[in-house]
Amino acid sequence: MIPLILGGDDPGFFERCCFGRSETPHWTSVASRSGSEQVACCSVCANIYRIKDVPSKRYWCEKERQIAKAMGGALSQGKYQRPKRVLKGGY
Ligand SMILES: [Zn+2]
Image (cartoon, rainbow, N blue to C red; front, side):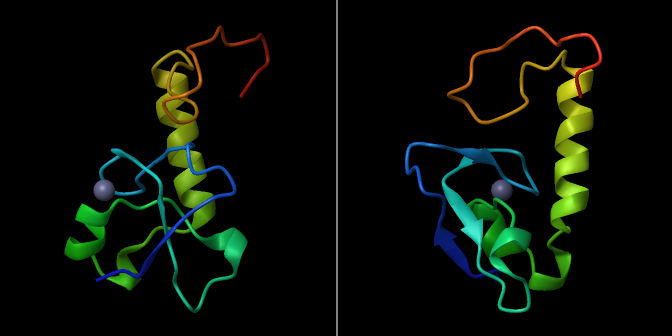
């Protein structure tokens, strides 16, 4: 069980869960991590995984970046960002 908080300054902004990649407004609230080290995690995965399974922020960002790159940049951030062209030299 991973502790979660309803995250972000913008409650309408969904990030992708660090485990299942479903869009979620929840973020981890792991005591051993600083605020900037927390990652997005949906309530389903929070019940399945343990705190030690939570990837580092760096790992999560890198994985998302690679997926976004593979998908042509369309899935770079949350559902409210429209697919956009990848600029030359971007990412
Ligand atoms: Zn999840």
